[in-house]
Structures are given as structure tokens and as C-alpha cells.
Length: 154
Image 1 (cartoon, rainbow, N blue to C red):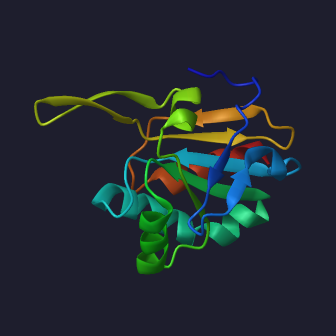
Image 2: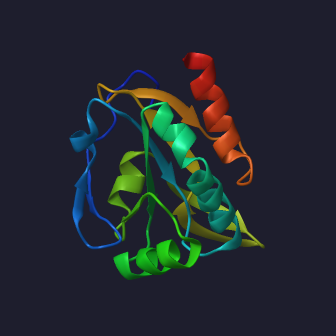
């Protein structure tokens, strides 16, 4: 697992429009990189919509949001359109970025074990270093946990 203070792994992934997005392009801004299991599932929808509704507050704090899941760009486009999301979603189909951030792990659900994304968010500072790791939250409270942390640091 990555540690606070270390450089965030740089990556380039396709967004919902199949345009390449590179993390290092955001140097000079804080970036909330949040990993979620799958677009259009109940928990992921709750989390994404709360971030959507918090975009103005996050922007006031100089924070850009990037959501990453193993979904295809087409699924991401459908998710954005259906939920009127106002931030970028990135598709990590081979889960290489999930692995580099340590969030691709063995999960247990309803008696089954399989590999998947462990819901985690990373706040990356203006210099590209990990400022904070959010891994203890409920999907409906995620945005509040992030905003409260940012306000405490301001």
C-alpha cells in the first residue's frame, strides 16, 4: 500500500470519451483520485452523485475529482449521462493503475472470493505527493469525509 508523503504513481488512462488523461497533467492542483468497483451499481452511484453535488465546494478548495474503475469508456459514458456527473471518470480495464495504488485485492462477497477494487480515495497534493488516503467511510458519507478533511487542512 502507498504511504502519505510518497509520490503518487503517475498514470494515463482513457476517460469516458476515450481521451487519454494523465495524472501529472494536474500538477498545481489537488486531485482526489477515487477508486470504485463498478459504474451504475447502487453504492458507486451514491458515492458519485454526492461528489457531483459537492463539485463547487471541491473546486473552491482547488480540488479536481477523477474516478477510476475497471469499466470500459462506454460504460463510463452511460454512467455519466444517466447520473449527470460533472467530473471525469477513467477506465482501468486491465486494473494496472488499481494495482499500482494497491486497491486491486481479494474480496469476499456472499461467500465468494474474487479480485476487485477496494473502495479507496487518494488526495494528491499540488506537487503530486499523496497527502491523505481515505479508506474508512460509507459511500453516502464519502464526500463529507473528504470535505471535512480539506476544510481542516485549509
